[in-house]
Length: 153
Image (cartoon, rainbow, N blue to C red; front, side, top):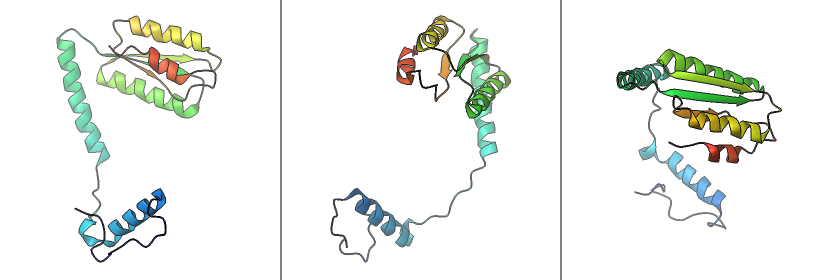
C-alpha cells in the first residue's frame, strides 16, 4: 500500500534523494489522503496506570509468595531538581507497590570511582534486582561507563 496521494503522478522536487524531500512529500501525501486519516483516540492515562499497577501488584505478590521481594536501587548524583523529583517518585511508587526500595543520593562532587564502587555494591546485594542511576549525571561522570558496570543478572 502506498502513502502517495492517488492523484499525484510524480514528485515535484529537484532533489528526490534529499531526506527533507522524502519527509515533506510523505507527510503531505498522508495529510491530503482521507483514506489515511483517523480520529484521534483519547487514552485515559489514569485507567491505564491503574491496570498496570494492578498487574504489578499481582506479580509482586506472586514473587513474595515464592520468598522473593523485588528490590530496586535508585541512585541520584547531584541536586538537579527534576531528577530529584523523579527519583523521589520512583522510591514512593516502589514502596506503594510493596517493593524493597533503596534511594541513594550522592553529592554532585562524587567521582566516577566512588559511583562505580556504589554500583558494584548494589550489583552484589542479593536484595537488589534492578539499579536505576538517574540521568543526566554531573559532567565528571562517564554515563556509558556506569551503564556498562550495571550487572544485568
